[in-house]
Image (cartoon, rainbow, N blue to C red):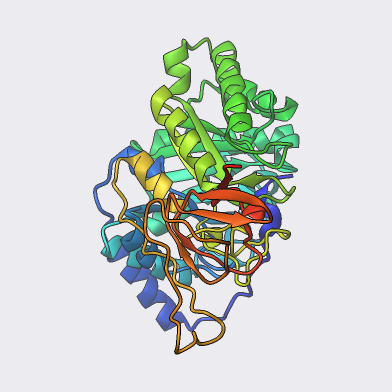
Length: 411
């Protein structure tokens, strides 16, 4: 039921052995920046091989974000790790090059295992030790300082697989001092479901405590920040009751993984929702704040809010709007995005150049497409007036009633 429905597996190219050896050596030689755990706690998910991956350095420069959660490691056949289940980690050069580029520009990566689709290593490996050995190959290959266990359907319904995954996480934690480990699972209005509670119970029986347990409050009847915060409060109570933690300790081990824009089940999460959850997370001392995914953190072209995409958000936005929130969670001040600029479809008349509403409170007679509107501008549309909430260039189909993230009715 989770966000991994958007994944379509990329084809794996055959690479010559000499080139592979060179690229892997290059990736290993690039030292990761010395970053605090706040950056691994804020790393948004990014698919490096599929869903039209953006240039992560471009995203870093535009947002101030320094880390990314690369997804996903699955079984490549038996107990062997592979990207998306098809690209062997042992022979990888493509992801190694991405990691190398991020590190050369002062950033770093975490790697996420599991997700929604494919066969997970916890299902394919014989026990926790074998599962840990497979993941240790990933840690060694990319010199990782952080790893995420994304335990979702159907794996988290398999108690033996969950025991393998959590047991492997515990072994990695013991054998790699300082390794940042997050455990991510489904969110519900009750915090998490029955299988999520069994996952917590298994961790308790092992005596395993990761840096955080994060829930995904979407694809479960959620809409907007208030529903997500309600789920986080409920999950907070589950953490206290399961592990015997006080409130502050539970918050300090709790995280949230959101979905930007339109979810698989047609929920909508706008920039204002991310801001509200960010305020909640920082105000309560949550340990992690992230989202799925950077691949989707751009506007669909043409705009389409009726279909969920793996490569765009289906809501009105500037490129990388949602990634700026994870950078803020880490403590950075992101650069301001440039004003949206969409040229008119026809040249303006030579006798009367188009007017541009003045910033902050200007008024036009009627809303028009292909105009730059500023925060505070007021327009009339179908007998009602609307106030602009975000600077943007209007497009056909973005009439004020259609995009509440951009317009607030005033009459």
